[in-house]
Amino acid sequence: MKNDSTAHPTVAYIGCWFKRDMYAHNCSAVVGSLRKCGVRITVVTSNCRCFSRAQRFDIDADELIDRNCVPVRLPHAPHNPGKKHGWLKPFIVRALRLDIWLGAMRGILYYRNSRQADVVHYDQVLEAFGSIPLFVLATLAGVRGRRLFVTVHEIDPMQQAHRWLNRMYRKCETVIVFSENMKRAVEALGVESGKIVVTRYGSVIPPLAIRERSKYIFFGGHNILSGKGYVSLIDCLRILKSQRIIIRLVIYAGHGCNGLEAAREQAFRAGVDDMIEWSDFFTASQLAAAYQECKACIVPFTGGSARHPVTTAMANATPVIATRCVDIPEYLGSSAIYVNGSAESIADAISGIEHGCIDVCALGTASRERAQDELNTLTVAQNLQRLYRGR
Image 1 (cartoon, rainbow, N blue to C red):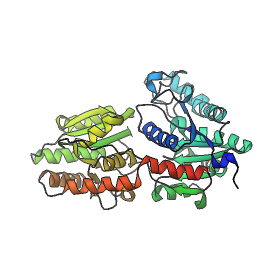
Image 2: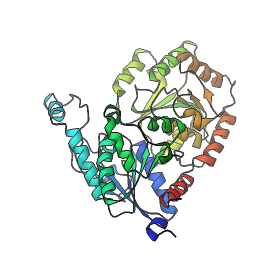
Image 3: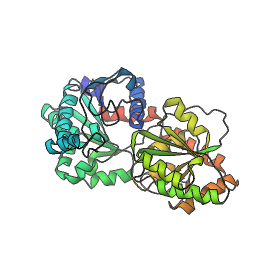
Image 4: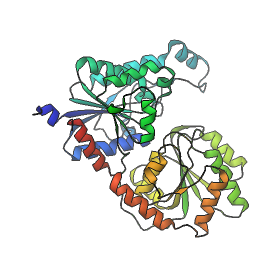
C-alpha cells in the first residue's frame, strides 16, 4: 500500500508565469486543471529575458498571470548579450559568465522554494527555465531524495554544446515530452527510453462564437526568423498580390521577439506590409477571438515548436496550412492542408481557400473534435496526476 505522500502528493510546479508568454499560459492552464483534480500545488516562477527586464531584481505584480505563485527574483543575463546598451555590459557578462552563475543561483532558489513538496515538476524551456537551473535543481533534489519530473518543451542549445549537462535527467523520475518526434530528440541526448512519457500539449477548448472568418493568422514565437518559414510566407504574400488575391494576415509574436524589426522590414521591402496586421502575444479570450476570426492558421515551420499555433487552431476550429515538420503531423493527422513549405505551395493553399476549392469548415470541425478528444487540459492534468501517484 502506498504511503499518503505518494497517494496524495503535494507538488511544486516550476515554470513561466509571465502573462505575455505562451509557455506561461500553457503552464497556467495545466496548473489550474491539476487544482481542479484536487492536487495541492504551488507555482514557483522567475523573471527572465522577456520578463521584468534583464537588469531588475524585482517582479511587477501586473506582469504575472496572477499572484498565486512564489517568485524567484534575480536579474537575467543572456548567453549571447547584444550591444544595445553599449559594449561594456555584454563584455562583462561574457567575461564573468554571468549567465552560468545566475542560472546556477536560480536552480538553488528553485530548490529552496520547492523543497517542502513531495513532487517537483520543472517546465524546461530556455533562459531562466533552461538546462543550467535544471542541472542544479536535479542535483539538489537527488541528494535530498525529492521526486523530480521534467517536461521538455525545448532543448536548450547549452545542453547540446555541453552534453555532460544531460546527466541531470538521470535524477528525474520521469521526463515528459509532447510528441514521438521530441522523444527521439531527447533519447539522442542519452535519456533512457523507459524514463520518457509522451503526452499531449494541453489546450483550453473555448466555446465557438459566431464570427465572420475573414483573416489568416501566423505565430512568430520568440524568434520570428528562425524555423518559422517567415521568408516563404512573405514571398507567398507577394505571389498572392501579383494574382490580385488580397488577404489580411495577422502576425503575432512573443514579448521581446528576436528579429521582429528585420521581419517588418522584409515585409515592407516585398511590398506586402499593407496585407499584415502586427500584434503582440494574445492572451486568454483574445487568443480565441483572434483565431476564430481566421479562415486558416499558417504554420510553415521547419523547426522549433509548432505546438502552440497548431493546438490553438485545433481548439478554435481554425483549419491549418502546415508543413509536415517537427510535431505537426502527430497533432493534426489528416485534418490539415499540408504544404512543402515553399512560397508557391502556401500561395496555392490560400488560393484554394479563397476560391472555395477547399472545405475549410469540415477541416476546422474535424480538428476541433480531435482537440476535444486529445488536448483538453483536464485530461492532460489527470494523466499527470497518475504519474505523480506512481501509476
